[in-house]
Each structure stands twice: as C-alpha cells, then as structure tokens.
Image (cartoon, rainbow, N blue to C red; front, side, top):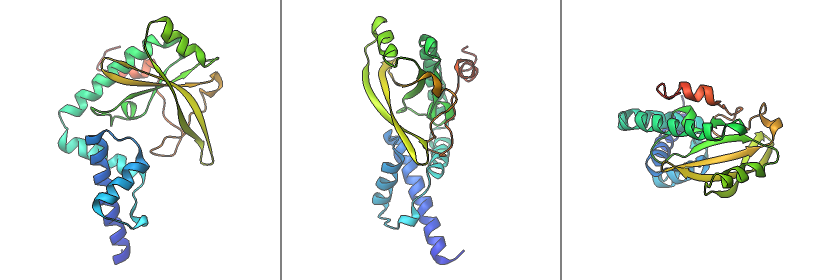
Length: 203
C-alpha cells in the first residue's frame, strides 16, 4: 500500500470509529450527517477518506461489544419485545420490522421502524385514532433504486417509552422493499413470526 493510500485508509478508520461513537452515544441515525460531523471533529478534510455506511455500521457493532457488552444486548431484546407487541397490535396491516432493531445494532436511543401495507394509506391513521393512540403524521424518503427515490407517509407514536415509526406502503410494495441505507441492497424485512423468534421466546 502506498503512503497516500495508507493515509486514506487511516483517515477512513478514524472517521468510521468516531462516527460510530456519535451514532451510539448521541442517537444519530443519519449516516451522511454523522460522517461529516466526525470528519469535522477529527479535522480530516480529505473526501477520499470518507468511510462507507457499511464500515460505520461495523464500527458500531465493535463499539457496542467493547463498551456496551452488558447493556446493549438487553436493550436490543427490550426493543424487539416492544416491536413484537406493536406488530401484534397492527397485524391487519401485515407489519414488517426493519432497521437497526432487526439488524441487531439498536441501542438506547434507537427507534423502532415498521413497514405497513394498506390501501388506502389513511386506514393506518384511522385505526390508531379508533384505538385512542395519539400519533403524529410525517413522511420519509426512501430509495427504491440507485436512481429512484420516493416519499412515503408515516405515522409515529410512543409505546413503552419507545419511539415507533410506521412507514405506510401500498399492498403491491410487499415484494419490492426499498434499499437499505447501510448496504444499498433491498432492505431486509421481518414478519411477526420471525420477530417472535428473535425475542427470547416471547412469542
């Protein structure tokens, strides 16, 4: 490895480690923002030293093993149990768990992200209203391919002191998941049966 390439690699590792620390300790889930923040803190201006999202995710796992070996697995299981309860509550919308709670890197600041499928989309909000569940409406932009992105409606609420975001898709979207922001590949989705199997026998 040349000195220049070695410099890039060293910078990438430092930024990835600092970005991972910021994500875990500060609850930041925006990869682009956390990369820039980490680089700024380390005073690294070389754009070629920017790590990939996958490199940061790997450092998140390493950080958790080193500094949160006891607390993080317990918190992850607690989040998965809350997710399971939410999915049972929302079962008519065929909920799927996605994101860090499914991947295993969720921590104390993490929210639960569920994909629901409904036509019309407004049926999810009406269901929450009928069940006296206070919620906020919003939207989330997801990438469907390297060149296409789309804005989806969301409903967000808090259960068991955990933030839960519901992204609402039409019924035809079940077999066409958006791209994962970490790997850039189709996002992994877990149904109720799979999540039940992840929750220490809670199913």
